[in-house]
Length: 498
Image (cartoon, rainbow, N blue to C red; front, side):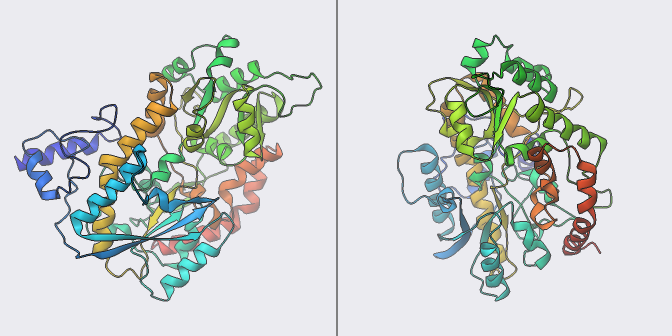
């Protein structure tokens, strides 16, 4: 039976396309086989699953039985843009809200299982503000041993790689990066020369909150007699050219003054930051590529990249089919007023729109062309990446508790988030739920973009060109290639590549 269990587990893991596949869950994302907060040990689960079908809710984490006698597990987290991320890890109490209660019950289950207590330290972390990084680095370099785990701002944590202050996750005992609760696509993108300093997974609810998608106004789609948007996705014809065509057909200069402003009707609206960045991922336009020998190289000057810049600029600046604004609330206002067909944004914002009177559907970012195999998207660079400081007191303790938290999140939190928050509240039809599956299963990451702040901002050349309506990618890349290359070489030294 043990051999059968191993085969079943291997089969299950191989079929997981992404970190959080929601197969084998019911509508509420629950399962009666093993309650999420039962405190059932890994060995007990393994014994039961020898005679029971392995499902998402009872998949064992294979962790040893430990009693830490009340030891405190301390996580360093952050507050960014007024959002306290500690609430995404440790809500203070049960409040009847599905995800909040699932988080609370997850923590309780792990506390009881391993006899641990959780403590959270939060510090302010903003884009372009070095305070969080400096305070973290100073603590680690002083050997304080203050943190067992660090949940860092994905957009800025890479600035610390060259300081050699993080442990390789592959050296942390009891962490199995092949398990479905870890984002394998993110791990693959961020692993260099066999070293993984930065990882993410289902313990990071922010990974889900920041998934990018398009929503479309069903009223406007009907008013303009548009074809079935979902069928375009299913047929593989949902491409940049098709999106531009539809967006242009809907846009109207309402007052006829020739000036395109927030008062007009658009086929497509986005903010001018990360929603634009996501086109790079969606169209397979890497900033940095992995080489055959395990290294990295700059990769932003291809003919395809030039074509992508030209087409996106044409969409936003020539056809008047799309509108972007540095003030995100302007975009929300346009969409809520039924003056935009499509809105490119992330799930946390989509969830906030569920009180709209007009119904909307959800779509993935389009493909570059029909030759592209999959629809790709990513998470806004505000999600959490986990690192282990080199001064951690007990790597085994960190490994066991982190693995347990991530596994329990996979079993009980993400099904609740996915099925209750997304499919039941945010998406308003079965077809949107299908589209969410596509988006989730094809989340993609680019180490060059995520490490842009430590590579002379090379990952943000694209968005700068679109803002400026410039197609001069080649010269922009040439101007930054040498300094970015030197910084990349310095970062590679920390990955053992001289």
